[in-house]
Length: 344
Image (cartoon, rainbow, N blue to C red; front, side, top):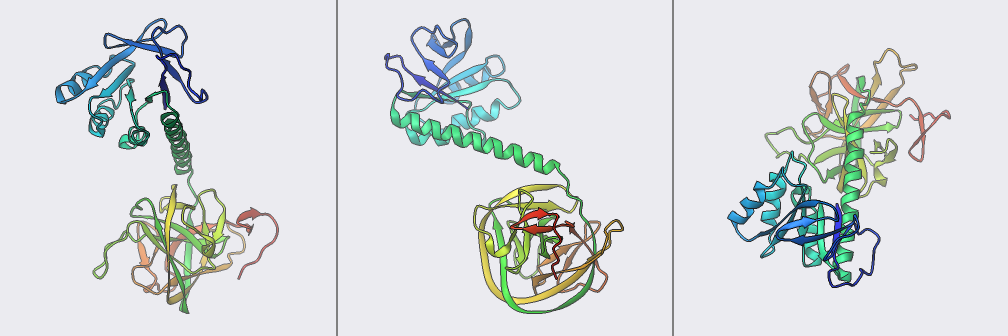
């Protein structure tokens, strides 16, 4: 996103870093422009059109220019988000970019993130408050873009999930159960990797499956006990007890694809627990050690099985096949290490 500053009064802005273009009376430099007779002029060519949006007909006139102009400079007669949102939606799939004139710092966030995309440029007067607000919005847009690109890369990186066989299900006493509530919704087949050992972790399904007794919580995973390891978005692990709101957790789909979700809240309550013991069935894994995980004794807590199946932890016969991840190495402060580490 760009920032354009109106300096037609001849005063230079107090801050120049982060400013992309200047609105002047007569442009002579590549980063200058002027507006005359409803057209945006650069030093050598016309950049686009200037539109004052006051009602639906004037909004439609602006829409008609989408696809034929590089830039549309939008000035709302009375500030409103609706015309901006309509124009952002209308320009989808075209090369036309939208610059919005704003007059208050509060409008920077609204225009900068309209429809989760935002305009392509904020056009502001030469005041310290507006410049600061625009620069903050520009920085936030950059952070969101980088994060989105990182998440896209992570989604494209499959994790090799393998089969594990349930050995025993025993009473685990009463313990602290951690429910992880995310800031985005999870889908059927998605969950988190949890285990008492960081080298063997099971895929715990999200609360996206309807039940006769409780509503779904599609933002939640009932993830078990505080001593358990959980896989983070950067590939390291943490103990469940170390998690805090804002942490990024790796979300795995049963098909092996992954993405990152932000932890919004942790709900900790004392509940009866089950100790679930399992071992890997993967033929290429040496030393198929047994692993285990402590989960709340509740019908709505499920492990992910093969071929789209899900198994409640309260109904896990011996030799039930579930899927998980075999890390194969030890961890030190969450990072994989080659040193010998044995966890029982």
